[in-house]
Length: 251
Image (cartoon, rainbow, N blue to C red; front, side, top):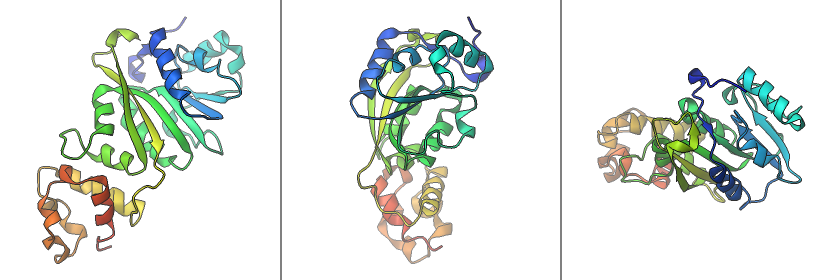
């Protein structure tokens, strides 16, 4: 069989019902190319391989798991990208769908990778630690609303699909999990540039307890800072308000 490696944050899905629910969610939107991130022991992979007329690839960093997958499902030969998801280019040239039980120790970094690939990502269905999943879908006014919420929701519609018990994994993690879906927005809010927008959002939440005026004063003229919106804190601003403010930055 194989060993489980704590260093890679490996908690493998074993619950067949959860695998079927993920596949059912995937099939709600049509796709031709599918990438599974972190197939591990193949619990979900074996279901994905049964999808017809799909160009399938998976990304696995662990040597031992790559060998196990190839031994168990020879049809994966040539379909495994043996690397970390964080280190690769987009796995297809065209648009593709992403799915995975994402390693919790790099889940935020994976979401930023999805942002890098946003022009090609037609759908993402991912298992995350419950707290991360809640942050991604949180709306303004919530304590869990933050940088991830704003940056993801500026480009994707977010949907909290279902929660998953610790007992669905081997070994059981010490945290609850949840599955979310991202779909590209038809009309993302206009922003001055990604650089300006990302900088503004990160500055605002870096001092989230302060009024916006104090958190972002370095990138706005003094006259702009007199606007009432700067009396608010970062968590009180909608994605659209952050987008609009990016046009008023002074460089």
